[in-house]
Image (cartoon, rainbow, N blue to C red; front, side, top):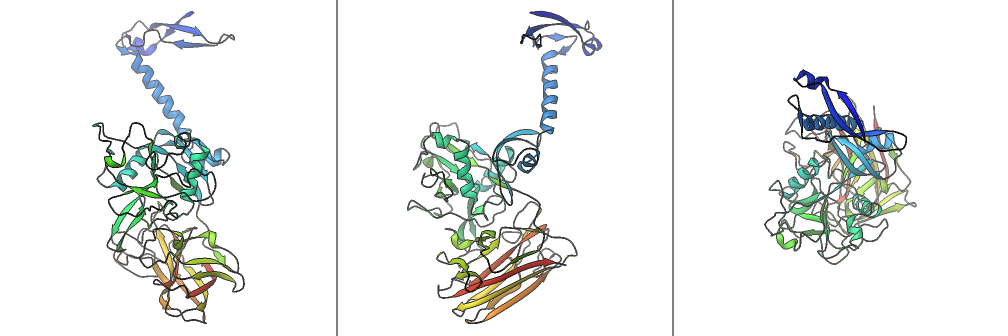
Length: 458
């Protein structure tokens, strides 16, 4: 034990004697020592020394947090872009997040415990009346302000969430993948009863965009109505398999009946959300190749956002006809998004070959996103169109045996309430491509081949 006298000018200024005796404990054979405060609660010269130490520690912690990367994308630049846990500095807080790096950016993933009431009823304690708003608020408070972004549009979000559970050795894995109510994990999705869309559908909590849901694997389903607002892990089918297949989606109610033993059963909320990297340059060209991975097809979803979408529709690369064949009615949107610049003109061209079937209609245009990646064209107040901006083709009739090419130019912004299909929605920062052949619900003998898609700017 070593005794040392430390002059404290601050204490002297407050009337203290300027000297403080502190015990020191040697912690290494090299003579390096660490101070241990013997009486932390003591006051010296009117100063609460424990409070002073706490304030110094807080300042040091703030300085340490400021040095942390602020996002998964920054962590990928500072370190190697390897999937795993990273410490991020988010709004002055040290957040330990799982980062998964993708072609679009990076998933920031965190699982938080579902908060329950303490009255023995096992009722979720949600800060908002609306379940979606509650999940968003809880995730944001934990350092995930973009929870749900990209989840609706990406068919990989469920697979990547499953991959994180396996790779991180999460509790659900150690619990041997409980099933049938033995464990829950809510994705950042909820239900929306849309007068515009005329049905109850699954949507992202981030921007209310209609959500992709994987194929159900256990004979139940994930669209039981507004009384079951949570969607995610309930049955282990698909989740327990450490592979790249989509897991089973299920829904459940916001009541104690769905949480029979909240003290013993694991319940989580996933705050997975996409951090967007720099957007693609506004120049793309798709032709005689399989470009389907660059687009999100609604026909693959169990819960298409429109009653007109056909879940039996198919799409595949057709080398004979030199493009991607679409069988039946489908909706597809680009996974890539593009910056919108003031005074720029963006030209979108498409060429199709109608192989069979008359009566289908074609819609081609753009999806508008705000600066945070929220879809502007659906569920948005002031968007009179309640639709995407179909400035290339809007309801054009497709006739069997014809080859057609359409082009549209987009520039400028609609004022709130306006509906010019060749302008972007108000507050748009970037945009994606939207294509709907064979609208509305079409028999499978209606088939088209998309032979070319081109986007360029002046």
